[in-house]
Length: 101
Image (cartoon, rainbow, N blue to C red; front, top):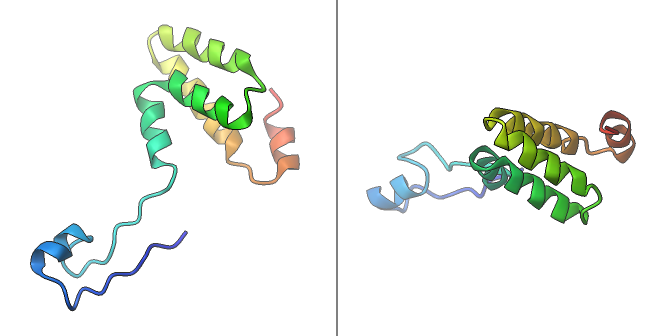
């Protein structure tokens, strides 16, 4: 991932602050950050979005996420974190091997 570079020499102080600080360069945020925020706020919504992206192959994960989140939030958060971990494997053969459950 690469961030666009900014020419700080020809900017005002306000523009420098808005573009990443005075002389510090740009701030590069991961593309997955909105999904992580959704997962922290309401884990079942992250599971729904993840299953929607995959075409709803495992509807039971959504139901399990709602049940676990209703049990004091943290079990549902751990379930959503396990889905993120399984989605991190880029090789489909490794993903099928590690995330079969």
